[in-house]
Image (cartoon, rainbow, N blue to C red; front, side, top):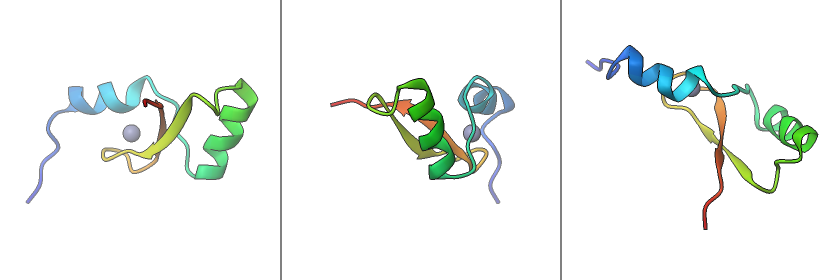
Length: 57
Ligand SMILES: [Zn+2]
């Protein structure tokens, strides 16, 4: 049995971020904003959709 850590935790991860249902949708968004070189997508463990995060390294 798994329980979410907390609602606050979930909000911090998802509430302020753009959510995408597919890689293609996220990519289109990044291209539109000129951020494709700076951001990458990752699958959110809370909502199961894609969010964007900064590339590092
Ligand atoms: Zn999420």
